[in-house]
Image (tube, rainbow, N blue to C red; front, side, top):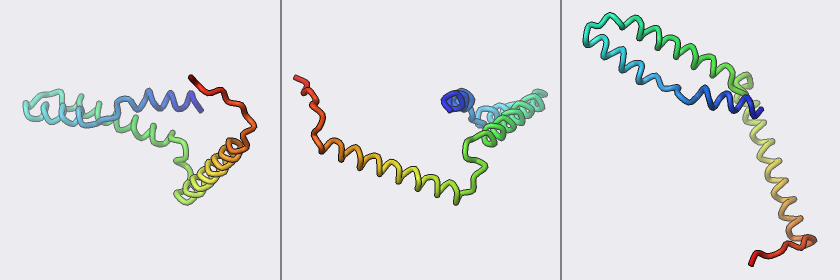
Length: 99
């Protein structure tokens, strides 16, 4: 899971299409022959974005399934917080106070 997140972070560093679109417009304004090259860069970037989206965790789950999973996780957090507060209130631990 951590490696997948690290991979996603590396890949999502530069997902902006605006610079490529700007380069294409500049080439078109100058009647430059590099327009096709810039368009192929844009096409490759869009394809890369599609691949990143298809590899995202949970993309294969329906919105209802995602909402149910979110509700379950929130309930787990609530239960764990309640248990933590209960254990803190028991005063069984001698926590040294920082001076």
